[in-house]
Every structure is written in C-alpha cells, then in structure tokens.
Image (cartoon, rainbow, N blue to C red):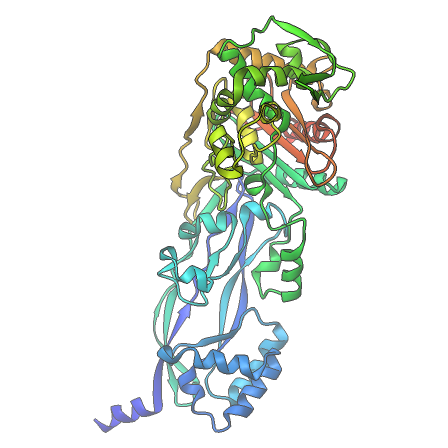
Length: 558
C-alpha cells in the first residue's frame, strides 16, 4: 500500500477544460465569414500554487510578465476555493512575447498553467457586424438567468447578433483533460481525455457581395442609417446594414477598456442594430397602409380627386403640404406617386384614429416581426386609449392629421417599414424575416433548415392592392414621382419615398421599394439619417444597390 500512498502524496490529478471551437458562419454561397484561430490562455492551479515558498514574489513576477496587478491575481486565485485542482484563468489571448516569458517562469514557479484555446476571427473585420454579433465571457447577470445555467464563469457566449440568437447550435461541447502532475504542478502525463466537439455551422441568407457593396456605399458617402434587402416571397435577408458600425475583431480577444468606453459613449451608438432596434417615424411610407385602408373601407375611390393648394385647415390651424405651392388636382395614384400630404390629411380625418390604427396593425406595425436576431423592438401604434393613459390628454384632430402622414407618436423599425412594402410586392402578405438559411455539420450535411413562415396577411381585396402597386410604380417611373431617383434602365421599380421630420435637426431620408415590378425578386429599404429628402438622398442609394443586385448577385429561382 505504501507505493500508492507515495504516488498520491507526490502526484496529483488536475482537471482541465478543453475548449470546444464554435461553429463557423457562412454566407448563402458558403463563403466563410466567421471562423476560429488559436489563442493562448494563462492560468494558475491554486492547489499547486500554494506549494510555492515565496508566493508574494511569484505573484509579482507573474504580474510583471502579464501586466497585471498583484491584487487582481490574488483575487483570482482566492475566488476558486471550490475548484482547487482546476486552473483559474488569469489572462486570455496573451501575446507571443508574453507566452515565451511565462513559459520560462513556469519552470521555477509551481502551478502555472498554459492552454491553447480557439478564439473568434473575422476575415472581413466589420462586415455585417450587427447581424453576426460578437462573443464574450458570460456575465454575472447572465449566469443568474435560467438560459445560462449550464455555463460557468469564464465560458464564452454569443452576446449579440446570430452568435447570441443561435448560441445553442453554434456553441460546441467542451472536452476535459485529466492531467497527472507532480507535487510542483508540472505535467507528467495525460491520464484521460474527453475530446471537445466543435459547434454546428450556420449558413446565413446574407449575400456577402451585396452586403459588402452596400456597406462601402454608405461609408463612401459618409452616411449613417440602414439598408435592408430581402426576398419578399421567403423573408430571407440578403443584406442588412446599420451604420455606424464597429470592427468585430475588437471583441474577439482581450477588450481594450478605453476603446470600449469610446464605443459605448459614442452618441451615434455604433453598437445598436438600427435595422431592428432603431425607432423612427415611418413618414410617408405609412401612406401605403392608410391609403390601402381608405380604398378598402370605401372612403376614397381611385377615380375621385380634389385640389391640393398646399395647405389643409383644421379650424384656424394650417397643416402644410410638403409642396408649398400645392399639387393641383390630385387623385389616389397621384397622391401616392407625388406623396401629397393634404390628400392624406383629408383621408386621415375621414378614417379617424381607429381606422388608422386598424391598418397600421394589419401591416404589422407595433409588433415584433420575429426575426432571428436579439433585441428587436416592437415600435408603437398610438390610439385614443394609449394617449389618454400615457399623456393624460385626449386625442386631438391634429394627432390624427400627423398620424395620417406617419408622423407624431407612431414609430417603427426599418424592418417593419420594409415589411409594409413586402406585403404589397407579394400581393397581400408578408413573410417572417430571417437571417438563417441552415444549420449544418462540418461536412455541410444539413442539421436543420429554416421553414419560411407567413407573418401577416392583408385582409383587403386584390383589386385594391393592385391599385397600390400601380401607384407605387408611378412614384418611381412617373413623370413627377418622388422616387424617380431610384429608377433603373431596363427593370421596373415600384416604391415610396419618405422625408421624416425629427427633433434632432435635418430630416431623415427614406426609400422603400421592390423590383422587378411584374415579378418581385427583392424588396429594399434605405434610411439615411439626417439625409434630407427621401427622393434626393435615399432613392439614389436604393438605385445603386438594386443595380448591383441585378448585375452581380441576382438569386436564381430557388
């Protein structure tokens, strides 16, 4: 028996986690846009470290190499009383210089442990930063939530984007190594090993080329805002741009605190995914919803019209049209194509807030779209009750007039506004938007694919939708259409511009449309913050992107 006793006295078995690599992320054409690369982590096994003669000096030496204070090293070691045979991580992603220096120290100091771990790498740095999202160590707050109960401090999880939404699929299963060490904590042999299992891969609906082109376009023009391109019949997102953005590589290793503060304190909020979290007045894009409502409820007829002289009066209050000189004779299609405000003030007053509310909700406003990305906002569709509850004041005619042109209390996300147009492009329904095409194994075998789902249907007659389609075609192709700047040479585009007033200075410019008119393949939404007129600023961006799509990335019928 004394032999085994001696073995136990002089040796020890340490349990060490062998981190599993996360799955890779690909675009729809299997271009790899997120992968892993090796990084080195230094830790301390408390049980062995306790055997050092001069602990204080050892801590000081380690601190010098790693650029850490003695306090932070001490608190790390003492935090792990329960797991004395597991390494406590001191520093991840150390430099090659730190690696060689700490390896030398490990010869004279007991209990230093070095391991190789996979870390996220982004060959295209900031590309699709919001959609992909970043990873980071699980936070104390997350550990308290049920979703994370299988995680331990130090585990890496997806914090935003698809990295977060599909964390379960993409996260691998860590392995374990049982290491026999001598009394000084030096590895003698590996007794047993449970291999880590790499996470599953994600194939996204995004087209890398279109995404890159759209981002570069915004960067070259210095625009802040959003671009979304999707396939209306399936809901697949081909490109989703939110500017300003950030470089994902910043999050993959050790985070530089000064840079982090810069990012979080930046008033332009680069970490926010404006496409799903930004709330904006829909402006004239809302005219698609209340315009269709007016037709469906029989309040307006496509043939009727009246004279717009540039102003609409409610008692002694003037509400101006954007075209101060007036539009002259305006019928339904001209009101959409030239975005006449007076026509919609009048229509809104006849529909009243109840019907404006009904059609806003029918088009999916005020509710999340259910996209597979975290932190989606639902926006707001106001009602009489809502206003009384929140502001303790009644609903005024002026509120109705503002709502009829998509201003006032109503707010929506860019994705919701895109869906308004998708519903018209599809002839009466919108699909749930999504960014995941499939989850696959390493060898591209399909684990599961996403099944397209309907998000909402418009409960209106087909003929009314066809009138709206024709009016939106005139908005781009007509002689005085506000969206003429989005027109293409040989492909018909239909759409709607919006110029949205906001408290913080210059108007926001928007364009939402679809093409080809006869058989829509793509829907596009463009927002340029503080860009001025929708037709002037957002229209040309939409045109360039549609041109690129039809020239290079057109998706063959699938």
